Length: 79
Image (cartoon, rainbow, N blue to C red; front, side):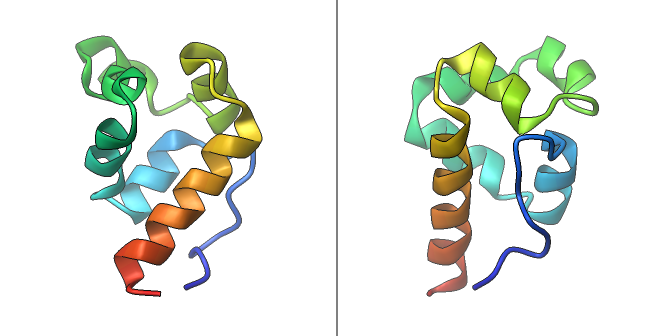
C-alpha cells in the first residue's frame, strides 16, 4: 500500500497520526523511545513536531523512522 501522502523529514507527526491513528501504538511497541509520543508534553507539541524532530528526540536516523513508518503502513494494509 502506498501511504496516503509522502512521508518526509518535514511531515508533521500530527498529520501522520491523523491519517493512521493506530500507528502511534505500533511505534511505541517498536521501540521504547517512542513512548514519548504518549507523554502529556508530546500531546501538546505533536501538532508542530516533524519526523525530523522525532529523530532528534529519539536518536533514530530520520530515514530509518520514515522506512519504519512505511513498513508499518504496509503491514497494516496487509501488503
